[in-house]
Image (cartoon, rainbow, N blue to C red):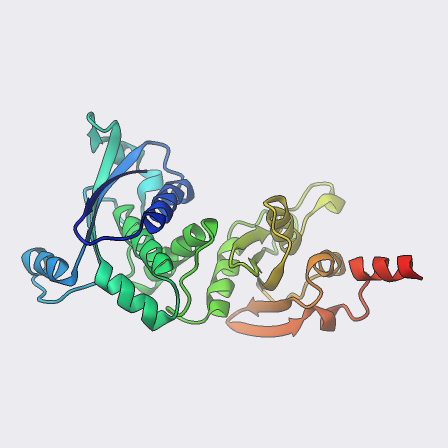
Amino acid sequence: MLIDWNILSGMGSDILARMQEAADACLDAEKVNVPCMISVCLCGDDYIRDINRQFRNMDSATDVLSFPTVSYPAGRTAGSCESLLRHEYDADSGACFIGDLFISTEHVASQAAEYGHSQMREAVYLLVHGICHLMGYDHIEPQDKERMRNMEEKILSSVDVRRDGEDGTDDEKLLSLAREAMTRSYSPYSSYPVGAALRCTDGRIYLGCNIENASFSLTNCAERTAVFKAVSEGARSFDTIAIAAKTKAWPCGACRQVLNEFAPEIRVLVTWDGHVEEKKLSELLPEGFGPRSMDQNTQE
């Protein structure tokens, strides 16, 4: 993602670098296959208040404003609208210009303090939120809001950033992601989709779904899909896994054993039909055999 910066209110180069990384991740998550460009103005509250007065008839400062150039059809976003994006192609930059963002650095500072996290995290979140709007997402209707929040979390987790404290608890976000993963299930034989969202201790989140096979024994559960994805990316430490299904579904024995390899005390959340229950893995797999057991055997 090309960014045309207009910095009226300063921000550290380390924050700008993370914002650029997050902008690139937006296109990856949305699966946009054409080069895109945005303009980003970092400004103070007075400046963004003037923009609000001029274009939105609002006499107040807000944290971020977005002005997309593309009018997306209802229910569609940038990833499925390549032809519309190409209409915004700019020969000078060699990219499709998808809109302008204004971000208040004063709001970045105040909201970071309010939520108890870093200004870098807040700045990255506001940029991702704004770019999601430029890509066609919105949060007016409840279903659209959930869709947009899921995309934001997907992008933020991909760059190791989460914005804690908004729109519910971390657990609720994880459960929502597990339900999203459930929709990607490949389960033509059982017709029983399962989704999982695995959170690392550093905040990264990996999603998984059950993937069935005509040779039934080769089927892989959602929990193991998430774990294998995480481990293949270098993650080894996990604190919570959320599992979504049509009925209450605790991990099977194989999944419990795989989880026990890396996180014997991991919290396990299951959700179905609006219900949520929680247990520790050690409750589901008492006296489990794992790496510590191997160490004990060696010592003996």
